[in-house]
Image (tube, rainbow, N blue to C red; front, side, top):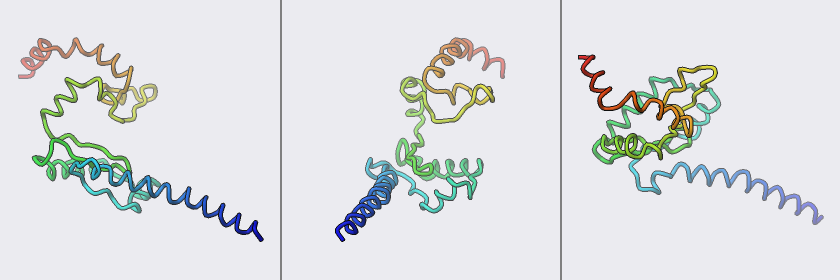
Length: 161
């Protein structure tokens, strides 16, 4: 009869490992911005996230643009950036122009991976400077840097007038 209790114990241990641990991880992810004391938009309910991940409810591009616009309007002036969730992944939306310039110009080497998918072999137009990461990004930036100098941009701007 002792083996029945052993099986029950093993089943309970497996349940704890495969049910409780993911719940703890999800709670951590869903409270990321609260724990870092950053103004944030509350995450979507788990059922809605699951529908999007399984492809039952596709997210259209214009819905995402409206979402970013509403985030900008809601948090502009309250903080230099705000937090939001893309599925369960915490992301930041930079709202302050000075912070954007600091990230993209002064600290560009620390922020070269923007998490955008590209396939330079099958779709070369998707592999632009904004979507590349790591060494690919650095090589392309070094090739393009002379084109976007002050003098070149001044000539381009004068030509557009």
